[in-house]
Length: 318
Image (tube, rainbow, N blue to C red):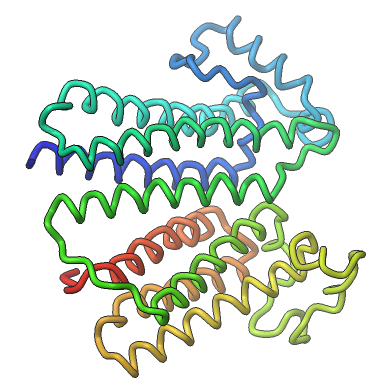
């Protein structure tokens, strides 16, 4: 079991790294640099001719024509490597699931085999979702759909959560019955992450870079700019940022109440939520600097995992 436990931990690490590199790919505006899917290709361009071919393909995209018209081949390489690295990690993670699953098949508990086959299938689906997301930015408007970006992120969190629960079960952790108060906490954190993806996709962090008010107002003036009215809650960058702020404040406040009322069980998740809020505010006030923004995205993953441990495991031993 020690070998299988180490394997699961390596898979969890690989998926977490995938999410972090995916965030860096988006923040460096590298996601549309590979205009072809190539799911079976592992090697990057090696020769000058291969690089020129990739660059020529990119030059046919709307992003090059309308955003990066003056980009050089060397500048293209700098964004290409991020997207290539993200895709390569996905492929290697798939192999990291599949190969041990084949060679260690008899040593893997039956319940874990089924779980890993499901995770492998979800990983393949995630690759398709990733390309579906990229394709949305290869049309006339070189902007990736924030809805597809959100689906891509949520799927990554689902895979990560399944792997983590599998590891805890294999380690013999005692699971507790989830109560309504825990479901509410997880929903608040989950919704905050979803709206964080919307903020990222709509580049809503580049506006209203003030806190706690939004340019002196509690609610942004153009919150109802779009019609019909309901579309503002998913498509209007100002309104989406406001909802993300509101959800984050609510999640932190609710977690604090749980800590005060039910004790130290909720201490760690609350502290991690507070750190995430500070990172989010810093990202906003500093106009989305790369490293702080990336840390904010990565910390959301940590908050989610710590929260899962809080509501699932009977004894918190972090």
